[in-house]
Image: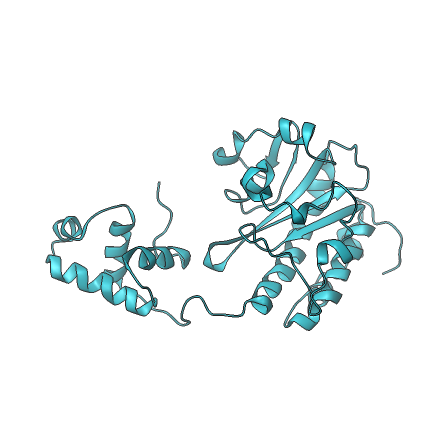
Length: 270
């Protein structure tokens, strides 16, 4: 690929996606730096600055094998007022990051709100005007949220090189899904490479009855109440929840429910 700027009209036609996915894949920490540089180069050619965050709950910045902070030394967020990765309260206060907790598809945003492929009532009411008026250097962004195993959420954004541009509707239609694919590949590999401990045992199988008991427990039912609901003895309910806890390496009932929820055994609850 040469260094010419890729326009919205020919973006996808100018990239060999299978090759690109190979180039941004991370199998070990040694792959991180080159893969990040590749993503930055693609963003540059498409007219964007890119910001990546693998875990909105963590204060640790993304780094390569040498401990180099990617946001600073690869993606170039170094100047005063743009070192967002040092703002540890950002995940709690930014409406854009907050929206990533409720949405797993790319969306774009400006001071008028959040716009995605479809309607999501959880993000429709999030107010963005104050954030863009008072805190944001850029007037719009394309956001790529990625929901990972163990309830980890990654929030990533693309910003037009024209800082004053507030309408990214065309860029969103042309680029959002494309960048969603390559960023997911990079982030997924990075998270696997950087994780030093196994949080939950692999190849885990819970029985139908164990899951049923945990689903009721997750919405606040006591063992006695669950026993009445499923027509089993109190002792049997306790056994199933205890057995699930043993499989999940949990130390108590609350952690058993939490870990089962992280793995998707409990489903979404209204």
